[in-house]
Amino acid sequence: MFDLNRGPYSTYKKIALHLVLIIISFIVLMPIIFGISVSMQPRAQIFSYPPSFLPDRLYFDNYIKAWNLVSLDKILVNSILASSVVMLGKLGLGVLSGYAFSHFEFKYKKFLFFAVLFTLMLPMQVRVVPLFEFISRLGLGNSFSGLVLPFLASATTTFLMRQHFLTIPKSIMESAQIDGCGPFRFLFQILLPLSGANLAGLAVVNFLVMWNAYLWPLIIINDDQKKLAQQGVKMLFASSSERDWGIIMAGTIMVVIPTLIVFLLAQKFFVKGIATQGIKE
Image 1 (cartoon, rainbow, N blue to C red):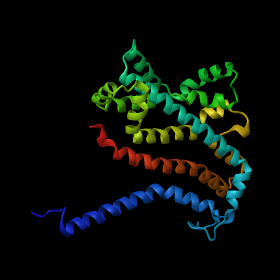
Image 2 (image 1 turned 45 degrees about the vertical axis):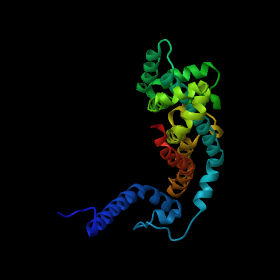
Image 3 (image 1 turned 90 degrees about the horizontal axis):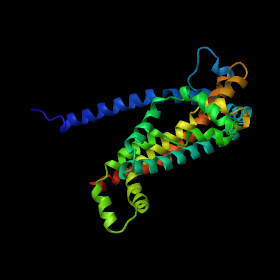
């Protein structure tokens, strides 16, 4: 019998696998590549026939126009600040609540946990009216506090951190208690270092949730100077004359760049978290 994992068959198998991965990667990246290409073309070339996929020359005026047309610098700062606050709030509350549900016993624990999970069944579209009424009565309408407050807690983060903490053997906690390690010291010095990959993944997801938020910022924020990235892209559609796709694509690409930076910064924590998985056993 032939062994497909050795000899020339193994080489053909690797080549075929890499070709498939390259094709899939190209399909996934195709919209981004096309968007970058359009953002580098003047209006005349974009609407020319037959259409050209590559720009004749690098045309950066679209980026300058998009930056100035809707004050994109202010919008990006607002988005980075709001997304960072929401990310830190969700991680902080999610870690503490997940730790409480996984390592402590208290009255109505199961009921409270199921109450937290129940909120996952209520999408923003269902909650937006009572949430807007609540925030307005607090006097936080059209404010940064009113924008981020509903996003600071996350049932998903609480659930995932609880499930992750439950996978860590109780013998580690018992050993720590024998050594005189208190609950908070155990959390910050033992549990969190073992949770690098989980925290990095949740940080990226929670950052993107706020970065991509559209409905709630659209309702709660009226001032153009306080709007976020997705509202900025919408403003480009409304402000650019006769749908200037070069300007719209340039603004969209600039809105995407910060999310890529966040992922690249978190990537090393994925690797570190994977490397420490064996410590749990």
